[in-house]
Image (tube, rainbow, N blue to C red):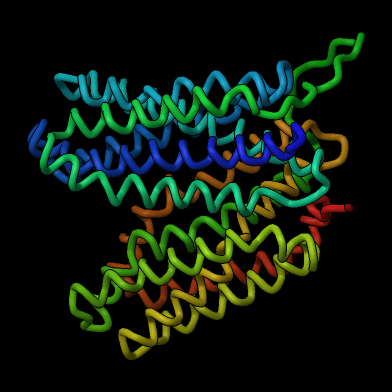
Length: 382
């Protein structure tokens, strides 16, 4: 196995660890009530603190990679991420918990940008797509953490769960870091130029594609069960299947996504994906029966699966822009959806109903179809 192939599997492990730690944090959210006696409103603010840490540090990660390359930076933030849950478990009060959450979000977000940039470097080295498989690894890490988290907390306590996640992540990172592929930092010029964002609008529009792909994903992950219970009179055990089917088809298609993109190209894949996703969300919005909605959300998962990986690949391959710069812009804009979307979706759903909200989500996916030619830079030429 050559160095590029080793780098492909190394970056997949990095994605797994990032998803695994993120899943560990998600399990800990439910422990804030017994630990600190906080209300749901306070928990919402704590989650926002985590997101702000990620958003603030994502551009910083891009700047550091432009100077030192993604290999060095992803190693640093991967090590930091593997132990970033520990302060969360040791925080004795809310002020220290806020600091721990901000730092946790900052490390996870910074690692996220760096590992996506390194995955683009692997794509260039192999002349084949790997980002969809990498994002599939992230989903698997999230699933594994969620599967073992509740059992561990119930039988051994929240601190034992944090230690288990941290030790497991640290071992994976220690084994993987030596195989992370090396890429070159942005070329230095003799003439010093002021640090500024790219003037080309393309990379920002690609970030918009990522944003419009992540908001519907959040709308399904966070609110589909509530929609099923409230609007379709589904039973609790049936309502949870909406997210399960969505996540399942999304994971499968992410596993297959690189092969599909290699064969049909990024633009065509994005167009078909956005149409399938829009159709699935729209059918779910108009469903009159729980199982209609479940099947529709499964169709939406097929479409949404590869939108963000393609957008990130296109951003990291923009002509005239360093991979780290393009990636940090696209990831920062894209992840705004995961931070800002959940609360407004709940607010507007209360005012207008979930059906209208999901119709708007379908329109967002239609915009992605129109913007598909902008991801031509993600075409992998063997």
